[in-house]
Image (cartoon, rainbow, N blue to C red):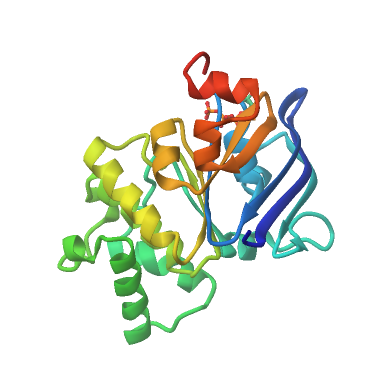
Length: 254
Ligand SMILES: Nc1ncnc2c1ncn2[C@@H]1O[C@H](COP(=O)(O)OP(=O)(O)OP(=O)(O)O)[C@@H](O)[C@H]1O
């Protein structure tokens, strides 16, 4: 069994009086793709946002419990600075959200922010490599000065993935990354997830059980803010231990 790259213990999130996540314990294993599935409102996105402190940016969200990255606590007095944390734990959102800047500057943004790479040849190389790894280089190599927002939806999402990997994160969080895309663009992103899984620990929220089955090694089933069951994806989809998981994967609710 691979080591845990990230661990959550007794992790809860409240939005005012509302419970978003309730005492969740979950390990995200290094170099694996973990899918988070479950009915709408069960806390998948809330959990994902805890992993790189994106809930800090939501008014009224209160996180309690522990989250660790390589054993180091990310919250609290001894926690990791959120900006540095987000370089190590990158995120790709549901709707592609390139900056209103050139394709080149979208990729260079993170390395510049963190002072990782010198301008010029070194930055050119990071931009090229990131676009290649995201499977976008051939399509955009002659238009790096054009705006990222002018690309197709699927290309924009691959641009956002290239932007996320430009800072060499250790973990990539994906919140329904294909929900705004057509089936062909979705298939390309799924292939990309497979390739990226050789280099990164990936956590993906998806509403598509087929997608979870296709892309992930491990699956966690969430229900009403709790993790009901987690295990190897094949086992979760063929022989779940819990009645609620069985009900969800066979389409009885959700
Ligand atoms: N910003 C917010 N303010 C108030 N309540 C919120 C906020 N974000 C989420 N919630 C609540 O927290 C609970 C968990 O929501 P969350 O979005 O994490 O679920 P989800 O499983 O990702 O849902 P979906 O599949 O519909 O995206 C829900 O009851 C939701 O209404």
